[in-house]
Image (cartoon, rainbow, N blue to C red; front, side, top):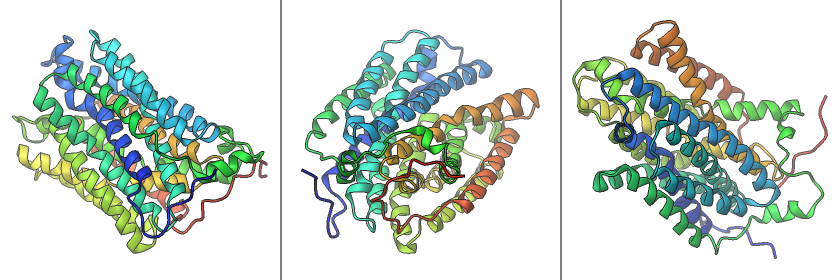
Length: 421
């Protein structure tokens, strides 16, 4: 029997709670490496006085994790439209839970990278499936608030990861705890119902989860690419500026005691607040794009503050990380817009692949930042960071301008299979 949709003003429903907790565990595991990066690399024998060795090992591991997210986004997205949203929520969490246990026992940097690659594949399914399920179960006037709650609550997983490390002071144990949290989460998912829209589409003969449908139709292809590009600033800020905040601090004002894990914690606490607020702001404006433009403006201002020369102490740098985090708290709206762009037969594929394409773009952003600007062009860390940010924001603003507004869009439809001329 088809489950009923949410009615009235109910937003904080069981699917929203479970999706939020799922994303909480997802973010705990996803950001754990950036929090325990230096102690874990030191524990594996990396010379922490060699800046080149540290950045090289760090970039290698996070790039492998992001490539895993990219691959997993495709795998789980297709499965979400073919087998159902709940199948992804169960399967993905099993994979990344096992990968996290394994990470707790690795002894080499290469093995660290491979374990995070597998974890990345598993982590890729959580957010897209959760956002798709919540979007389809909530009434359209409330789905933006619901998905913002999922992302906002979930992002506090990074804060939890930071304090777990500070309490245990054992990076290996942190990974094992992440695996345990994942297994425990499976028990909460038993009572969650499948999307009624998916049940209806499953009864039809329409093609589901065919990723090539994003590429065989000009209009769909444009929407898909634009949906990816509008999310790029998030991983420029987190993957480069916040992740390497201790290295930037040395260049900006010299001697410092910056803990990049603490920078991540401050940034993600602020992102979580931003993600909750942007849902309410979108509701107030009755527009996804207006809320997005507002947060893009805040991103430009906060990054400008980071590089302005006013940051001359550890406290100011942590403040800058929090400001940049809050300003990139448009993750929830960005993913929601990706889900809303496409019909029910492709929605899970879109909502799962789009954020992971953005995450998977980090190696390309790192390539521009490190290999081109720093290594080939011999620019310093700060200049490379500034120019990389300018390139990213120009691309994103152009993409946002051409992106469709989806606030009032009815999601109960399917994508046609025929190719357009």
